[in-house]
Image (cartoon, rainbow, N blue to C red; front, side, top):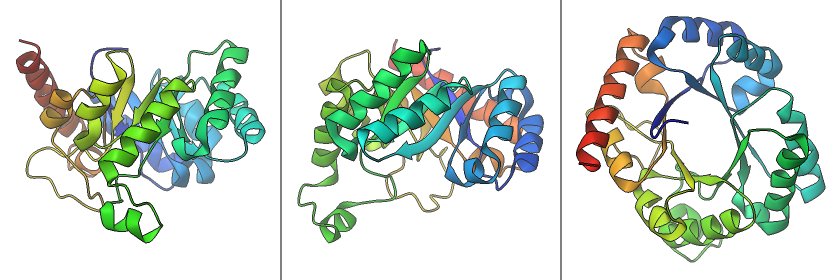
Length: 238
């Protein structure tokens, strides 16, 4: 994988719209996220379409169940050749280890990513469900646990990426949703940042949804974000 990947979020309701979106974006993006809405509607068909187009796949299912069930579900995902697959870090060490085992047993290239605290949540939300630690501390604690248990990296807010990079070292993947080019609408995300912010914080993959797929010209929007990413990376590593 390249140093910084842009992943377009296919937040569309069915495989027909997914295929049309991929066609419109063209060479602007080579990596796509398939989440719950699209996967439940037309998951296998969409994944086969992406593979057929030579695209890389981020399957964002946030698996969270008993370890044996997650191991079997992970094994089922392997047949689609996905590059990234999410689980919930709150499943704890045994569940994370079970997902990693399924990948090893399949001899697959898939990387397991743990989700710590959803980017739609803030301190008030955590307090309401009985978590007394602030978001940053909760993310760091769950992130360390997940990586030490076999996850290859984390899905995290750009705002927590710097602390996670410092804690986890250079090898962990850090995939950041909630990325919005300067001037874009925030939408339902509460912890967002620009592509440049995410790169400076240590992100390896940037997930961008509406600013690309909702643009009048998705390919042009994707290429503009790519240019912003490359410029920020050049400045950061100068």
